[in-house]
Image 1 (tube, rainbow, N blue to C red):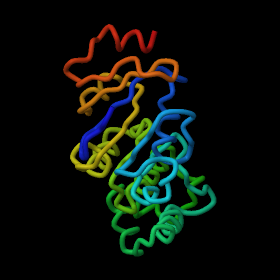
Image 2 (image 1 turned 90 degrees about the horizontal axis):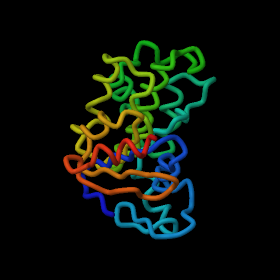
Image 3 (image 1 turned 60 degrees about the vertical axis):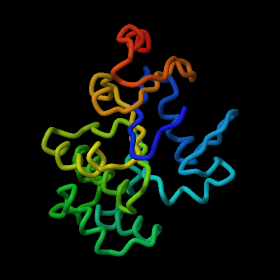
Image 4 (image 1 turned 30 degrees about the horizontal axis):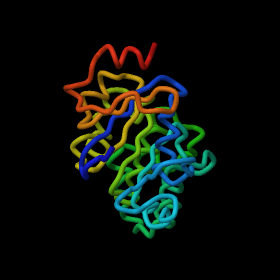
Amino acid sequence: MQVPAGATLAVLGRNGAGKSTLLRILATLLRPHAGEVTVLGERLPARAWAVRGRIGLLAHEPLLYRDLSGRENLGYHARLHGVPPARVEQVLDAVGMRERADEPVRQLSRGMVQRLAVGRTVLHCPSVLLLDEPLANLDPAATGLVAPLIGRDSGLTRVITSHDPRAALAEADLVLGLAGGRAAFVSAPDQVDPAAVERLYA
């Protein structure tokens, strides 16, 4: 299968189906046992170094240091990617965290931590977003804040997983159903068989 530039692939399946593993392979964090994977025209894992800086990964874990503040965390990631400090402030504003940016991450609510994780994901202006349950712990107001950064209107190529198949289908240009680490189906969202989706979660 192939995901066109600027399109969104929704990956559906129950816990343990392989959704997070797939994202980790695409993020160059795991090596596939078989098959071929190409991201942004670069074959993995041989050319992983060429794409890592162009990928934004939002995983189950926020990938933030709990004893550092939000501003310190984003500043650290900015230095890793050669991003100017002004971008840190821009992202803090975008996720609504400027006022709490100097508090240690361990003191923040789960929703605030998720907003900072979204900020870390887009800080370096990636070309591809890998989003594992991206709206977890976010209330409607926070969801609205992050939508321009990681939602459909971002215009970025996205691979998303969601515990809510209906919401994922509404976001998708292409749908992959996973069961037991294998593709159960690949389809356009308006051609997905509801019974096939139900079988994924049975």
